Amino acid sequence: MQTLLSPQTNFYTKLGHECVAAGCSVDLFLFPNSYIDVATVAEVPRLTGGKVHKYSYFQVGLAYLFIITDKNLLLNV
Image 1 (cartoon, rainbow, N blue to C red):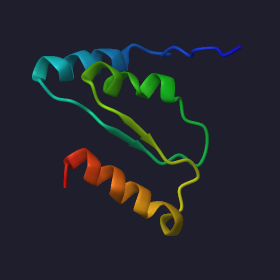
Image 2: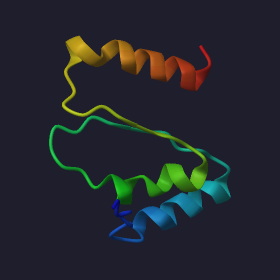
Image 3: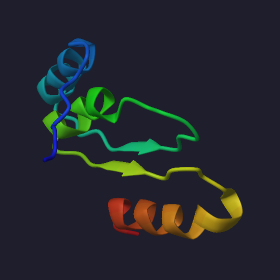
């Protein structure tokens, strides 16, 4: 059984609503090497129509091509 996590604070929800009111979308690039509360910080991209890009245990030599590809797809380069 999977459990859905919910945000621990409403700060990011409020920020997401402010971004929507301003007409902007937010994409979030995360490079965690330890625990990060993705359910909380991902509220902004979720509300604004953006996307979360998560690269766990990031190492430049191994992951830079994935990041460049994701960035180029995001910016339509």
